[in-house]
Length: 411
Ligand code: NIG
Ligand code: FE
Image 1: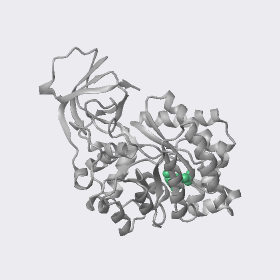
Image 2: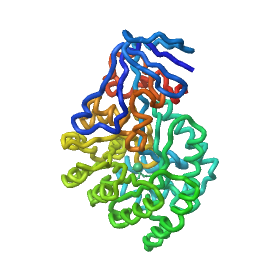
Image 3: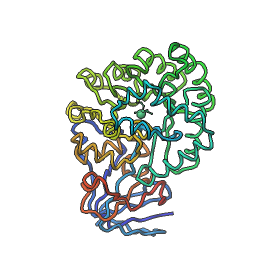
């Protein structure tokens, strides 16, 4: 099946050859072709270029994209979209003055979601999660990482990972799965942290590995959650089972999580709201992708990742949603890109690079996703007619998406 899309006002993120990521000053460069064509063959990108060079082809389907912009679908490398119920009461509690930390200390927060998850059946969790997945697909996300971490029991964690696997089997969106058993200590292990870590390492990990349920291992490295030492121990155990680390660090405090991630060659270190100079230094000359989650900063009213400082230091940066019931009940990557421009002072080019090719890198998907490149997945967004791609971050409350193609088909 050959599909030709012609007269595209502007085709964004075109890369002749597959690149892994963009860093520092390169992030400001977003290669585009004006008045372009795009040819798909089945689920892959076959060819693209300027309309002047459109080859003679026999297309099974031709689409006219006059006035419309086409860009690769968003690569959302950090989400927790498999969960049960919601935490809207905590949202109101925060409006009334409680902090995220105070709510967690009262048994709310992650433990509240864990209680709901363990009380729900696998089918109920699947039904709720698939609605969120369908929503983000229609908002232009074409690859997503999903974490466990609301089970905090052997059964609960495995249940979550099975739901992620089932979503991956049933939807055309590419899904990567991360085991986050080390998201919080369950209440009955509060005085026996070693006991819970032993359970993660000796009971959860072997079962996950045996059933091939995860690609990555995550730990919430933060004061009051997992220490740097505990994080290293869990990363090491995950690596022994073939899981590369992708970890939560520096959300509220800089305690050495970035350095631990780099030391264990983590694929990404995520959150980074609080960055000390030594954290930026540690990321230089590493293969670890820093990931910012601006809609989490927005929702919790906490600082934004210092993107300008990091890019100026030559680092790459990816953007992800963090979609979860507690700190970011939204998976809208258009809003993430917009918020990165408005609040983190990223240019539209930097933000689009961060949410496509760098997001793909943070999921190990740079070779198949994140750019318009021959042979990559035909995953892209077709906008409504717009004046220029600046509209995407500028018109922050509007849905500018006309259609989303995943694996060569409109969803
Ligand atoms: O990435 N920080 C840790 N985990 C999630 C939030 C978890 C929750 O509150 O449910 C995050 O923000
Ligand atoms: Fe998170």
